[in-house]
Length: 240
Ligand code: GLP
Image 1 (cartoon, rainbow, N blue to C red):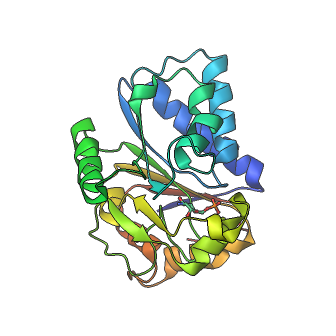
Image 2 (cartoon, rainbow, N blue to C red):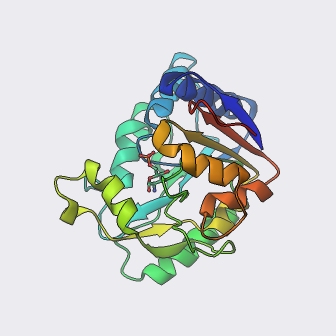
């Protein structure tokens, strides 16, 4: 694991954007794993600026998102489909057919999860996976207790995640209680991983991820076993 300590959210976002930008520019073909949540928002903003200023053609870039809420259609403003279009896809020159997210309103969710994994495999796997982390050390929507071997699956969100995400909804009852999420096995298959964490609320999760026991109770702890993980954080007292 590699650790980059930065002063604040802005620096974290800029450093991450530069890494992703460079990877895009240096590749003939790239599969990017994308994350949502508040953490990567500014990174997407910076990245879009860099791509546009440099007139980077993105027809060689494919994106696969980590997760989507069950029950929210792509047009729903709270859906991750909507978030990605608003924050990134509509701002850059990427063919929309290159961008994939799980379908949270699929009639057969079991089939959706299987097909999502097949789709990732057909693309040749994820080259660079961007991650945030939840306060309980969840990554994507893999809550404590999720199998380290899991592929894309349907998840029951924990109370703490529902509460954390309630800020994006009018009222807590509107927060979906299930999601379709890439699994920990899916994430571990990525060739490289870039995890961003900002703010004191993520301190404990980061400490457990980096120094704690590798246990399914701390989903992000599995990243200790990955050979190419970079963590960028503004949390001051985190050390490797
Ligand atoms: C959600 C997302 C995760 C994200 C986490 C942290 O549960 N599914 O991908 O990492 O929240 O969110 P935030 O970045 O808003 O703190």
